[in-house]
Amino acid sequence: MVENKMKLLTIGELLLRMSTTNGFRFSQTNDFRVQIGGAEANVCITISAWS
Image 1 (cartoon, helix red, strand yellow):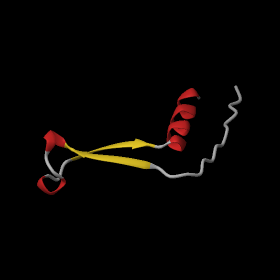
Image 2 (cartoon, helix red, strand yellow; image 1 turned 30 degrees about the vertical axis):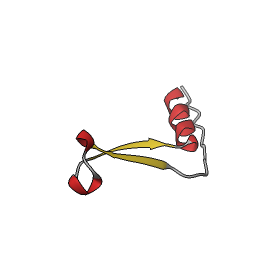
Image 3 (cartoon, one colour; image 1 turned 45 degrees about the vertical axis):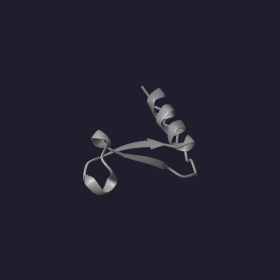
Image 4 (tube, one colour; image 1 turned 90 degrees about the vertical axis):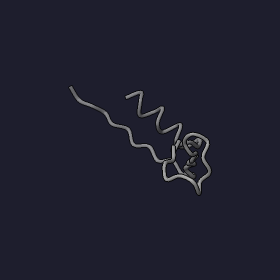
């Protein structure tokens, strides 16, 4: 079986949302939750899940 692999290039910015755990302020903790976002990243993640 021959696999056809598609290459995809997106240009844009990746957005990171950082939040603290348990409602602490940034200066009060070293633990952060990071969530990735942005339209370009969402497109790439979705397309990679299709293959």
